[in-house]
Amino acid sequence: MELEVTYDEFLQMYPPLKTEFFKLIPKVLSEYYFVRYRPPFLILSDNPDNFDDVDTGELLDLYDLLQDYKNIYKQSFHLIKQFFYITQFQEDFLVSKDGNDTGIMIFGPFSPKKVILLGILKEFRQNKYQFLKIMKGIKDNLDDFMSKNK
Image (tube, rainbow, N blue to C red):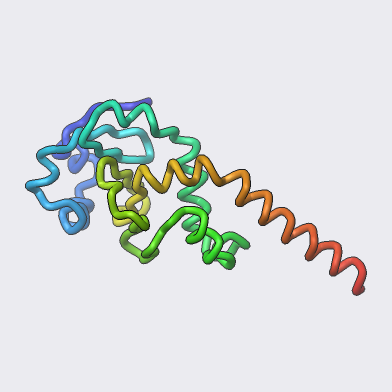
């Protein structure tokens, strides 16, 4: 289900986001964005046509990959940085290498300060199979090594 909502309507659903959100997007900018709520994500864009570029399943995949601190992807974060051109990965934001991906931002209410930029999502879409193939190769080699050295 997808809803077109105003920012104020979204805040009624998630009131604690108000202060966190404005740390990321000044009120002046928020007036220029179209807002769409696609559970569990809030998507903002300066162009409503951009909403068609966002697939919720891919968002969930990318979010899981970046959020899971215990799995092999997190342990190999340098590969994620290489493939997704993320120059900063902190608790509260992601920044892409070119810095030009402000046209659309995606927020997950379960981590209100997390922002996924559309450019990163496009890189993820283009490179996720290559990335997962590399990670599978690493795992297969490790399994093979472990079985030979029991």
